[in-house]
Image 1: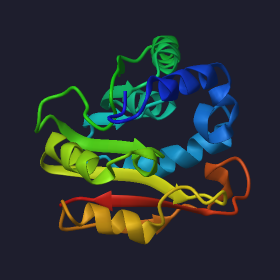
Image 2: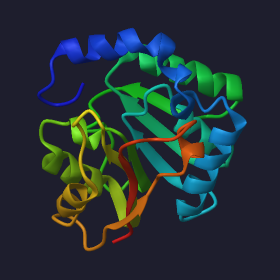
Image 3: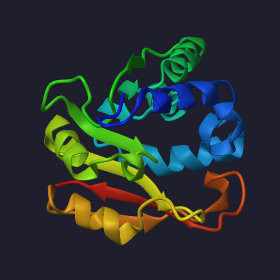
Image 4: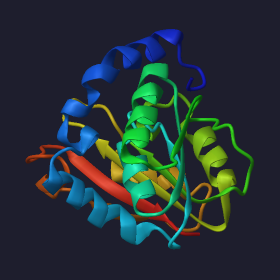
Length: 201
């Protein structure tokens, strides 16, 4: 579970698990949406068989996509039912992606383990994003990459790109932002700020 968040949060996301993949960018069932995420993420992997941590992995769609491309992916999510769906999805795809129930802010792996730490739509929701980023950076190998997909939602929640950049630069030397306003990523047009932040150093 995420540090400082109640069991009610885990229960909420457990309740969302059955229908979570109905959103095009969650389930990646639409071939056009899946292709868009493939084009976005695969060029960011530093090696042909990168070791990837997917934090707040939800139903595992991104983890499975990367595992199908040959990467070794470990996911963690606070919601047990989300993890169940992710494990079933990986089994159905025939890929060895691994998923654990745990705290996305303090993942259960040793420092220096991963080539890539991938986090989508999690940082904005954490009670202490600065502490989480410190832990995520510790998970990386010396030449590892931090890959964040975040946004500032039309509802008022989220993190603007400038806020996320400031947070990352407390722990890394680089933070490169690209807008994610291509509707094929989301299954349709969007009306808020969505972006990719990559830090290679």
